[in-house]
Amino acid sequence: MGGPTDDPAGDFDLAVIGAGILGLAVARELMRRRPGARLVVLERETDVAAHQTGHNSGVIHAGIYYPPGSLKARLCVEGARAMYDFCAEHGIRAEACGKLIVATSERELPALDELERRGRANGVPGLRRLTPAEAAEIEPHVRAVAALHSPATGVVDFAAVARALAADVEAAGGVVATGCEVEALEPGARALTVRHARGSLRARFCVACAGAWSDRLARRAGAAADPRIVPFRGAYKQLRPERARLVRALVYPVPDPALPFLGVHLSRHGNEVLVGPTALLAGARDAYSAARVSARDLAETLAWPGTWRLLRRFWRSGVRELAQLASERALARAAARLVPGIEARDLLPGPAGVRAQALARDGSLLDDFAFSATPRALHVRNAPSPGATAALAIAREIADRAERELR
Ligand SMILES: Cc1cc2nc3c(=O)[nH]c(=O)nc-3n(C[C@H](O)[C@H](O)[C@H](O)COP(=O)(O)OP(=O)(O)OC[C@H]3O[C@@H](n4cnc5c(N)ncnc54)[C@H](O)[C@@H]3O)c2cc1C
Image (cartoon, rainbow, N blue to C red; front, side, top):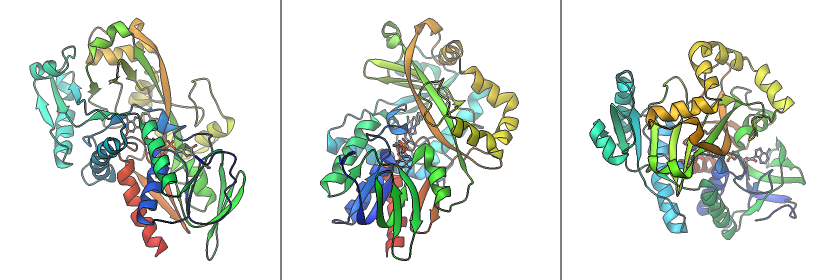
């Protein structure tokens, strides 16, 4: 990778901001369409995949949850297929281990029905409704009144995918410059000036995939302030090795339809089983430790009218429920609803991630992927889960839009 010794300068055809899975997938797609193009990826951290891409559940989603017709529905189904192909071509282990979505009470059946309807409408391959006995054949320790089984759901290391994407970009002649934060985008008649930590460069077109910082960059480039990114911390625990046999593959709950999160689930990655993630408003956009607070991030979250509207809307149900997920015992309780017998003492410390979730001024959490355009630039404004699964398909969508601008 270019790394901190290069000072990207001069004239480029294309600049991509952010070396998460999305920025790198976009860069690779653009290089495939325009062989020989002068392209640079600018990343503020010293390595690729430093944020959401390297801190997630590692699940290749099959496309069940999303409203038919949404970008998420289409791009997740296409993206999952493309992700398995990419991994096969690049020697990255991607295992279609299958997943159970488990209804644990009769009350959850209407929501399970709706998931089944969506999954079928979205063209999710192999989706099956299961009785409790059938569910037990797949996951013997799960307690279900009914379940959905998605055999095409799988696991992968998205950071490894990002590294392979970066290698492809460089092999095609692109530059990946790390340690190079972009500070401003200034459009001109013939090019956009990209000011970054080590100087500036000019590009004919720029795609910003800046994750948790995407709203700041977009606003500075002249885009609307709405939506704002609000960081939601997602912490995981790990099942004690002796208890890991309780889970064979992936076990998910029926999610709360009011929230854009999938709920506390159990996911096996090799010999490890992760339990989580929690979903709590965080004090910083990089709150990998619960104690981390950034005065600027917190002030921005609190100054945003949407935050207060969100808190009012979810005060009784959502926020209280989300707050409960802060404790280890509550996390164990959520896991035990799916797999009875899991207790707080079965949980060991695990990793954490921070979701870049867009929140509208009116207090609604944006569900679908969202983009906004400024002169000579396209900004990804909301790419939460299943953004990693969908990355290769989102990249095609963005490249189509970029092509129109470059004509
Ligand atoms: C807890 C959690 C669980 C998840 N589970 C799943 C899952 O199982 N399956 C799935 O498909 N998705 C999952 N997701 C979502 C998935 O991780 C994201 O959709 C995906 O990683 C988004 O990729 P990205 O490249 O947009 O963002 P990121 O990986 O966050 O990358 C953005 C990059 O932009 C850089 N950047 C920001 N500002 C600047 C700047 N000014 N200049 C230069 N660089 C900048 C950042 O440093 C960062 O590297 C999960 C997310 C979380 C947090």
